[in-house]
Amino acid sequence: MPMQWNRILQIWSGMLVFLQFSLIFWLFYQGPILAESIPGISIQFMGLLLGGWAIFVMGRKYVKISPLPLENGKIINKGPYAVLRNPMYLSILLWFLPIAIEYPNWLFIFKLLVLISVLVLKTLIEEKTLLKAHKNYESYRRNTYRIIPWLY
Image (cartoon, rainbow, N blue to C red; front, side):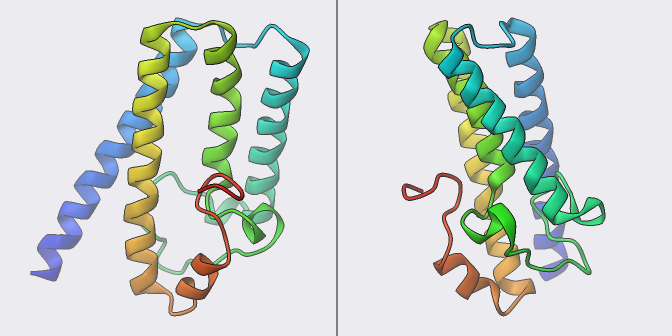
C-alpha cells in the first residue's frame, strides 16, 4: 500500500509541476511581461531578488521543482527560509500580481488564481511528505509562514 501511495504522490506532483509551468508560460505569453508603473516594477524586482536569494541560500543541489522531498534533503532555515517555507512561490506571485492589478483582464486573473491554487496544493503535498521525512519539520513549520509573511 505505501508503494502505491508514493506512486500516486509522484503522479500528482508531476501534474502540478506541469500545470505550474504551463500557467507561468501562458501568463507570460498572454502578456504583458512587465508592469508599467514604478511601484509595480519595484514589486516585480523585489520578487526577482527574493527568488534569487532563495535559490542562493538553498544551494543548487537542493533546488527542485517537485513538491516531493529529496532523498538526502535537509530543512533550510536561513535567509528567506527563516520566515517563509516557500519564498520562491512568493517571488512568482510578486511578479504576476502587479500585472494583474495594472492590466485587469479576467482571463489573466483566472489563470493567476489557478496558478495560486496549484502552488498551494504543491505546498500541502510537500508539507505532508516533509513531516514524515524530517522530525524537525513540525517545529520549523510552526515558526514560519507558508507563502505570505504574517498572513499565510
